[in-house]
Image: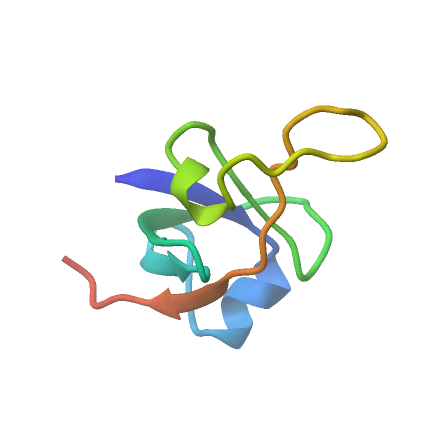
Length: 82
């Protein structure tokens, strides 16, 4: 299973601990992952590319840098352990 880095406070808000399975859901797709608690800003997640590529719109380019824009809004749902 892929991983998602998550702030400890954000994980606690959805009753998740390190290693718990979650589903990330955006308007473009979904991704199942295991939570890894990390020192990142609350309200942010970090995933690996290309595993999470289907969570972002295809062809999205940052206008200033002219590079792919790897940002997306997602909903996080805790999955049953297993």
